[in-house]
Image (cartoon, rainbow, N blue to C red):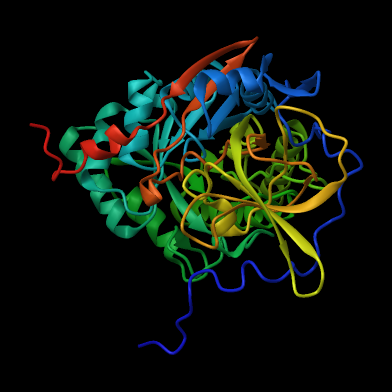
Length: 469
């Protein structure tokens, strides 16, 4: 028995956070436009999204439910698509993907980044142009590679020497010369959470620059008649608010491109700098507008290429969270409200809702922060420090760790959590056999289910022991 074992979620509930939470905003009913979707507003105290009143949406779709502001998502996609000439924008489907969103992304002129056969299947079902699809993943199975190559995807991002051999074999068998990118681990760790920083050396992704693996990978691709070297790829992390890390990464990728030119006499046609662009979750988060971010990246690559004596290649980026994250809001119903007096005389109010870590694991997994408000009414009651928690049998089942809500919050209230478009529904589970919530698109007062709510019947359908007589 391990002497370091401990109960699940120790001391989650009996200490105040250190440092203490920020003080409440002046108006607990206010909607910060940097955090909420572009159409979010209050009318008569009631939260509206996409021209529809949230209580009316809940009346039709229940809770918990995720409401996606179509106009907001499309506007953010267009902002990236038109930010700068010579830049290819691939929406990172891992943030959130369904056939409807894939269709919107295609209509706005973006490419699509998928990282599994399942995501590729969704893209194909949506009729997404295959030449505008990129396939990622650190362990792509032969079947996934066959699906991608035969579908005609525009690029496959290669992540290991085994994968180079697999892709070459698959492409050769199909009689296709497959464009590929080599993913480079550039040794840059962006200012982000440890578990979502992906460019430091000790990790599963890519070929290291430090030990020469990246140069060997490029040589292996060039030696294969079935593979076409379309470019180099890097990704330095997630939820990044500035371009300093990209500057270092771009310099190292361009230096590799210069060595490839010197060794092989070829110029790299494309550099993909990945994604990771941050969004505002709480007051004080200050991401750059897409145009400013993209123009900075273009300038960084141009500067590094000039220094290396290289022509500027096409640049690709992969925003996901920055497009869908702010466009979606999760709405819950409050079930219980429990003030808990702490040893030092302070009180924390636990507000339990009808969802939790099965529809938003990010708080438990990454200690993510969120903003929430009452959705069905306004209140002039003084704000109290709350912890919004879910219904699961885990002390770590927390949706919003520190929320200032009106002191009269009560059972039956609707609670809206902002900026839940990225990774919440995508990472949702059936923990405790809780069905996953629906996703409902809203625009101009109309609402359309784009992912239906799971039911208990859906869960039992997979159980081979159920007698269906």
